[in-house]
Structures are given as structure tokens and as C-alpha cells.
Length: 415
Image (tube, rainbow, N blue to C red):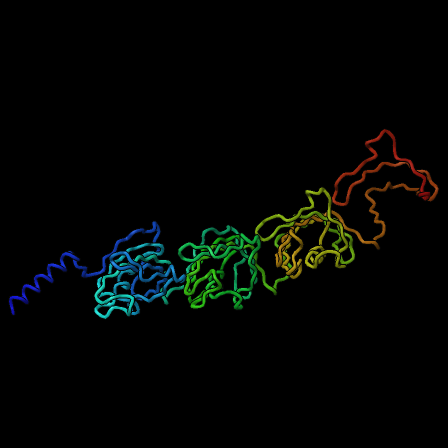
């Protein structure tokens, strides 16, 4: 009886060696693809989102997230995954691909898994890591470029306009404002954005480009968003800040060059001629009177121009230059102006005052020279001969009698 048992054992052992000459004792990892850039590796305590194909050793597939459509989410090192998968995922980088071979004792053991996995079965998993985060993660920001001159940065309750490219952590694009050719416009700190984006925008300057990485629990969490953002997805944004203002903002005069001689400043009801360059906060020009070679002419303080410009043109001197920054609620507001001025855009005007007058103005006479002896003064119907120089108020020459051979002749009072 004993000899038969030994013989049976030897036969059984020999048979098993024939089927599996090298029994797998631990997870065997084959790193099929390793990305060049690996910001971090998966470790215990991390959450991971990954795709897998599960097969037997003979290559027969018994499970696949690709067929189900949704990647699997798991927590490493907490016993929530089968031990072999848990070990096989550790040390992986986002976008890495691995094939792992898992022995039965690190898979479903002698119990198997229902009708799908027989007892004592070695399993093979093809893994593709898509996402990786930890509950201790913070929003991570990295400034790609920033303007030299930053007069103001984003604070809570500010309204901002920005362009962005949005991707998942594996690089999959889910949205882009550039494709819509329209900035994203929103309040900051008022719950209009996911928490991570509100944090990421704080402190940005107009013209700054910033990379913002937002963990799932500060993005769309377990619900995801539509068909583009899966559940438990880390979001990556490249943001270009185009504009910033606050509803409490008023007209701002940034620079001012006032002529030494200023006999009068403009008031409500004056008719003003001025040149201007109009730009957005990022410096992009949207209009200029210089290209038209013609001043812009208007009455001021009477609603003929946007409210901010009405204010900007009051109290100026002839030949004065000033730069004014006009918030949207004093410009074109939420509607914008056609295809030229976007909605909620701050406008910057560099203004040069050429001339102004008032319909109630009278002729102004300043005597520059008068002879000591003056026995005769001009009267209606007198014939006078005189020289003159004619200029605009800013001193621009127009014409002069000195350019002609004869003096100017006129009979006074006949029009």
C-alpha cells in the first residue's frame, strides 16, 4: 500500500513538472512600456484608475475593463484588491503598461471565483495605469510663463476670462476653450467652478500661463462629468489668463501727461476731438483712431460714448495724454460688441486730447502785442490789411498769410 502511494506521488509530481516546470511563487512583472516622464509611482495608500485584460495562462480571456467600457478604480495596500493585482500595480507610472502573472495563492486560491476562475488557477493581467492620486494630494500649480509687469493678480470674488486646454492625467483631451474660440468667463471663489480650479486660478496675472493639476476629490469626484470626464479622474489644465476685474472696480487712470499750460479743463457738454489706441488687458489691439487718420469726435458726459469713456474725458486738458482702464460694467458689459470686443472684457485706452470746445463758448481774444500809440481802432465797414498764422489749438500749423505774396484784405462786418 505504501509503495503504491509513493509511486502515485512520484507520478503526480512528475506530471505537475511537465505542466508547469517553474511554479510561480510570487507576482511576475513584465514592464511592457514605461513613459519617459514619470512624475510619481503608485504606492500603498494611493488610489489608482486602470484598465486591464485578464486571461488564463493559455491566453483565454475571462474579464476585461475594455469590454465593460469603464476603467477600474482601486485603493492600494488596503486589501481591497486581490493581492497579486495590488502588488502588480505598485511602482507603476501613469501610462505605463505591464503584464503580470499572478499565482493562485495571490489570486483566488483554492476557492476560485464562481464559474469564471477555477480553483488553484494562475492568472495573467495586462495592466494600463490611467490615473493616480492620494487623499493627501493638494492642487499642484506650475507657472509656465508670467508677464514682467503684473499690476494685479486673481483674488476671490474677481471675475476672470481665461483660455484652457483640459486633459486627464494620461493626456486624453476632454475640453478646450480654444476649439470654441471663446474664453471661459467666471467668478472665482463663488462656487461657479470645481474647488481645484478656484484654488489654481488664485494669484494669477493677466498673460500668465499656468499648469494646474487637480485631484478627483477637488474636481468631479465619483460622479465624473458627462461622457468626457470619468469617475475619480485627475484633471490637468493649461490656463492662459486673459482678463480680470471685480464688480467693485471703477475707472482707473494709470498714467497721465499734462501740458505745462492748461487754461481750461473739459466739462460735461463739451465737444471733444481725441485720438486713441484701444487694447485689452493682454495688450491685444482691438481699435485705433490713428489707422483711420481721423480723430474720434463726441460730446462728453451725455451718453454718446460708453460710460467709462464719458468719465475718462472729463477734466482733461488740450494736448493731455492719459491711459485709462475701464471695467466691463462701464464698457460693453456681458454682451460685448460684435466680434470685436468679447463679453465681460476690460478695455484699456491710450488717449491723446487734440481739441475741445463748448457750444456756449464765445470768441476768445488774447492781445499779444499792442503799440503804445493807438489813435485809430477798427470798426464795421473798415478795410483792413493784415498778416495771420492759423493753427489748431494743439499748435498744429494749418496755413499762414506769410506763405502768399500779398497781405490778407477784408472789409469788416460784411461776413
